[in-house]
Length: 165
Image (tube, rainbow, N blue to C red):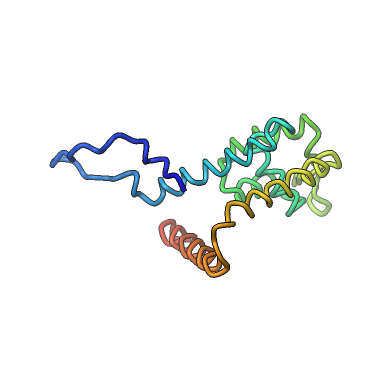
């Protein structure tokens, strides 16, 4: 697999009065770069065809799996900024891919779900995303995949330790 940091110029000697952070070896940076590359690759498949941005698809994917969430719950499940979620939801609502309703028991609470048109798009994009995942993991055997799941869970726990949650 190509490392995007391979194209960076060689690092100069660190200045003795500054801390050294080798960004190309810094795990959060590496995970972010990898995540961005994967998201951009997958969004290239559905973006032009359906006119969806990555944030819009993520919201649709969450609502396809968990209908009747509030906008705040969508933001929480996607770990995206509430403002970004709000803007993406506005576009999805405007296009008729998502619909808003009030919660049955609490008329003050607004809930979201995919519209029939939204489900049509979801039913086409979800298999494309799953195929991309299959291809991405094709070089890993079952042991590697199991280990990756364990390591990702441990990293998630590590984030919880950082945030005190």
